[in-house]
Image (cartoon, rainbow, N blue to C red; front, side, top):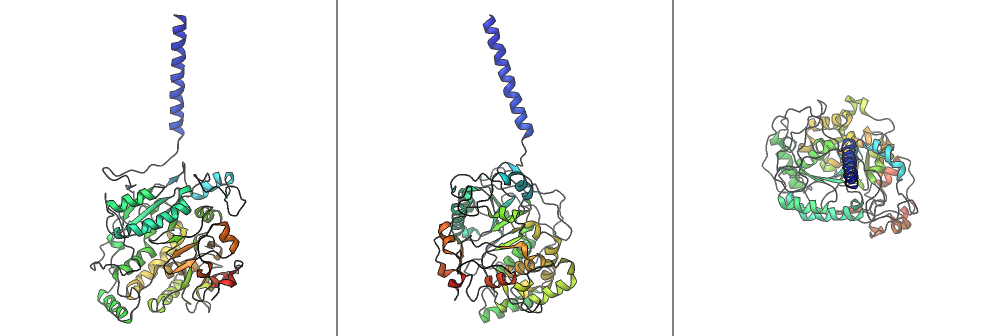
Length: 465
């Protein structure tokens, strides 16, 4: 009997220890959950709370269940949607967006880096700790960041190629989320294919109509005459309505979508891109550690026929908002005469890694709003690339813009292949260095280096025209 009693007593103690352990674990776990839509595919569809935003930056309404977002024109001219007037902007709710968490952490990217970065330094060069570890999950901290893609359902197989490139070269070790936006609901095929390829969570958002239609101040008859004239002159996308909606959306609204309010940094990815080299480190973390707000890999000159008054609108903004113009900015990259005229240089925005908080700042919102009221997205054919570039060049100190030499990238028709033979060997690149666009005559990258007093990579002379 004594033995039986002792056994029972030990069993009770063991059960008590287990329950105490579970209670401690649950009460000390800090995480943020995402509500999965009931009855939906297991693709990361989310119920998104509207984020708290300033009165100057009205936000979109919460996406409807089962709905999605915008159209991304490809090389071919996109199908035209019927022209619609934009409805009045919806009332904004006060509920703050819930911050995203990664790898068991939550909070700001800077806080994550401060807490966990020292334990796992970035592998920036051969021989650094972790450089040869390209398999398995990277042990370092994750930033509050996401990939973002504007796509149509018909883009599914081209975006699948892009996802495969990004996952194989980088994200399979970091598992960052991916946000897909469309002005129409994404279909089941798109969700199934993309969610099966992305190692992080996938989220699908629909663009609200007021962000993908003509603002009330646009004279549509005047805008149509412009499109007809551009078509007659053979200007690329000159007659496209949807291309203009896309450029305006990418310029001023994607970063204010409710899903995007969950994040601090973004990496834009388009269909049919290629990444030619291994990526040994986390670019999001580099942006945080180096306090960068915007980055690029390709730059070039814009078509002058598409932006005849863009710089006039920019100068008006500079006159009205001198408080937003950063000291030590990159004006020399944008202008050869101290700001009197625009030299048409811009960062190619189909690849960009940047700060969402900067895009949501008063300075950038005021900049976009000023341009938007002038109507150049519809009365001309302003692209999001020169808008982002001028914004970054004027509103940011030059130290906050970064060129990623070692992220090898292709988007038809241009290639960024890292300059420097040893760099390409170390990164296991398979791009042709002679196709590197960086130092060619129509590229603005050389101008960026010179304007900012940066030393060009060794071997750049061999890749000139």
